[in-house]
Image (cartoon, rainbow, N blue to C red; front, side, top):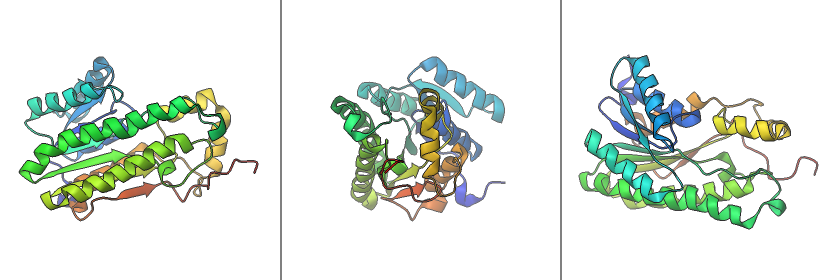
Length: 265
């Protein structure tokens, strides 16, 4: 039996980037706590397949798939509106999709154009989606907006600074929007994961195996965080148990990360 403090029964959620990794874990956890979820991916077939797998597991019509690309602002807004048309409203928006760096390297070697893509996806387009979703929440005086940030956006880490800059901007966005919406009972928070088992992490290791040793050396608990641990935090923030929290970025990094110095400094 789910504790009433963490019960999401009847809640309608839209989760971007939710066919794999952290996003998929969030979708699974929300469904397990009673919510209906719109699963989003750049490819509609992938979103529909993930939703079908979730429904088969839980034995109810708990999920459906939508197409949404973080780098296509219009598609994000369209996905939100399609989810509202299907479910009637969005109680919880989770901005989980992220634009990741083309490479994890020294700031001196990272191309300036790469920053533009990171800012557009992780800050500008998320801001557009959050603002769009917030208007009906504000009107009915109820709603939750959540974002998946990064520990790199709180503490700079060598080779992750460009990505961290975009996530630091996302954290600032969360704090500002939360202050604006607090009088209307709409809460806005973020979780900043550390090194978490995910599809993107697997891709990083595949292209740069040595990166894992560097990352792991800077995790005080010397372990990879599981996606379900981040999902548990999202359930908490979306539920009755998290009603006193807004404007916060909750850091879940298995300890404070390094200071951005290269490994051989």
